[in-house]
Length: 564
Image 1 (cartoon, rainbow, N blue to C red):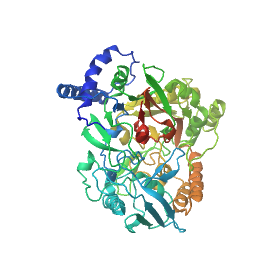
Image 2: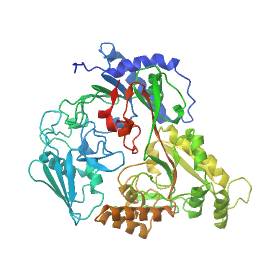
Image 3: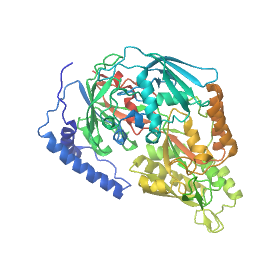
Image 4: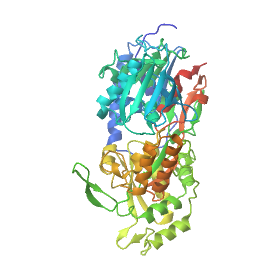
């Protein structure tokens, strides 16, 4: 490998973008212009100026061993420390877990070679891979696994993604065997193991690992410039063979700037939303990758009132329109999902009525929507009629009308919300779409329907979505206030199952109960779309089904990419 000077690649890219933006294809005007968007633009302009100044003296290598990628901004949103939850969806490019998901969404060995579960499902024993070293040269042993898990336990409040509250102990049996003992049966424990990547016990530092983690993966972080770029270089100590691409520059910028940079040839990979999927870029091909990433709308199930959480804090909850199950059911069976997808996303994606259909615990029930006449009858039988002839139903003095928040600067969520609103008019339901910041959405999450994005390997999403004990106790959890004792019991049965078959059956039972009362309106299983340079092979055959991840999942198999 040739030695390479690390430079501020972003500066040169942004310098090109100042020219490229003026020459790129015209994009459609944005429906959404909020103060949050304007603030983000101001921040971007400031960072551009700083980057260009730095670039004047920067040496940039454009040889074939380096690529520039834009995969969204979520990778810059938090610490890169696995102990704090980084990459808990399982993208092992810097740090690795004991196991990982494969292309069939099944768990296979990673830092572990094999594992076994005791008959009572309280003990999990993992045999570890020998001959593995961290990027700093220290050997990987059972001590590092024990340290990582105990460090998360000590700082559980800092890691909301990996829940180790059911873990009684983790012990090393020699250098290459680890034994986990649980307090009680917890069927998703393998999901937890796959989510927690291992850090070195000798050199872990909770401050430096935010931007400079040390791992066993194929790459190491060579440079981290906050909200600008992450430069990855090959980990020469990697146990799995040498990757083909020596350096990967992950660039932070907005979607439009990224697209312009791709058009001008400055990016090798660019994530795009539905606005760009029908465009073409010279020497690049659009790749549409399978996901478990679902968009849905929360429909509060309670009437408007004030309720307290377990600590006595008061919250406004409920919605007098969506609290009527007739409204929720009418929307679910009466809208035309394919038409909504066609209008919002140019037909990209597939209709969804549940979390996902490509995981063993997920419901795969058939559905039939666009039942407009049946939906209208349900509404009329429940007393929702259009007495004044304005096209909007009412029950007494209450109009069948509600707000819908499309949060953040996510144009695709806004387009989905507006397409849904247009479709719901056929049923006599008025939906008023609002684009708001996430700060506003969080305040209103228990009162106002919101467009959400979900998708993960673990079935615990069913617990956080449907279990009554989650309401008002955890942000983003059971925001609809859904309560059903039978559903809670099925979830408890799923957690306590001693084998995966029983657990999956119980998870499906919980979903079926919850779905029968329509607390969420599932709309679309989206595709993740990226323009990729024609000389870059992203190894689609080893891409796992993408969880919800704002673009980052494409790097799940970064070590397999080949630059031709």
